[in-house]
Structures are given as structure tokens and as C-alpha cells.
Length: 253
Image (cartoon, rainbow, N blue to C red):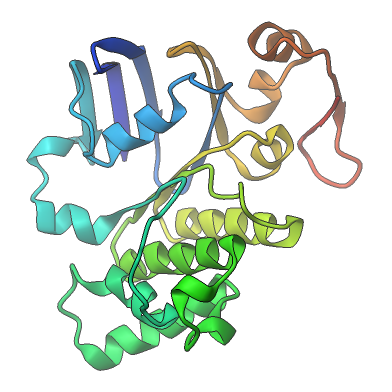
């Protein structure tokens, strides 16, 4: 469904991604890991169309991503950035409704989808609150609801999330990754940049580990999240065990 081939990206004349390749099939969640400055955000921004690559190919359903009509892409692909700046005193539900702007589904349908997305983000009780008066974590959940509303009824949706759990408590961190899994279960894909290795191990089908803009490893959580590789990339010694109740690695620092 998504294929990235030999992607190289420059920002301000500096190479931030070099020869990155991977593919993601419908139904999969990909966790993008790596230290600060490893290229995670640049990769997601390039997939979102915010950065033009220096070289390489990006494909969506075997079609060059740049050739997908903007209206189609806006209905199928949604990006949740690290930080969303909004300086207007919108009610929270009005912010979520911005996700429905690419669609022509009608006001009644849009209201239902906005409400459903807010329920999934545990944000419906915030609907009439002034967005600017919400906490950072509450604002993040409103933007999660917004991107979910954007692709709610899309065929084979694509969800990009850049460090979406940074401002969230532990319960809402899991809620956010569960939302990514639901997108995949609908026949879509989700790419999630994370710092938490255990969240990646639990929720991802594939893990892409970046180191200074290059692919250090790509594979299942068991294949990628190995103690020696984590030490080489992060400079931290860890133990990798089997999770006591789940079929995934458990990383202990």
C-alpha cells in the first residue's frame, strides 16, 4: 500500500535521510524509532507532502504519491504532527470538524463522524470547551480526534503520527496506539514515530530503526529490538525479555 524506495531528503542543505527504503501493506502498523535527530520527523513530513525529497520514490497503491490528486490524498492521508499550533478560540469540536473539510459528506454525517472520533480519542466531554483553555494532553487528544475524523470513512486510510504520545498520560498513550491499530484493522496503514520502545514492541507489526538518517534495522519487533542493536543506536545497555502476558519483547533499562 505504501512503498518508499531509496529516499534521500535534504533540509537546509543537510542530508537528514539517506537511501531509506521500506514497504507497508494494508493492515500494518509501522513504528519509526531512533534517537533525536535521526530523521523520524523528516520521514513523516516527506510522506505527508510537506518536504520534497532530493531523490527516491514514494508510492501509494503503486502510484507515485506526488501524482495522487490533492483532494484524494487529503481524504485518505492524515498527519498528526508533534505540535499543533492553533491560536483561535475555537470550541474543541470545531477543531475536530476541521478534519472533515476535504469531504463532501454533508453536515449531518460530519457531525456523527466528529462525535465518533471524539469518543475514540476520549475527548467527547471536551466538545464545548474552549480549545485554548485545554491542557497540553487534552489538546493532543483533540488533534487525534481531528485526524481520525479526516480519514474516518476513507477507503484504505493512511495515518501518520509524529511522537503522538509525548504529552499524554499512560492510559492515553495506549489509547492513541490503539487508535492506530484500528486504522490498520480497517484495511489502512499507520506510521508512528515513537521514543518509547515498549509501545513500539506492543503495537507495531514492523519497526523501522533509524540512526543518523540511515536504516539501522527493519523488521518485526523481535527482529529489530535486540539488546546489542539498541546499545549501538542509543548508547544504552538494556535487557530484552519476553513480555509476561503478550507475545512481544519487553525492554528493561
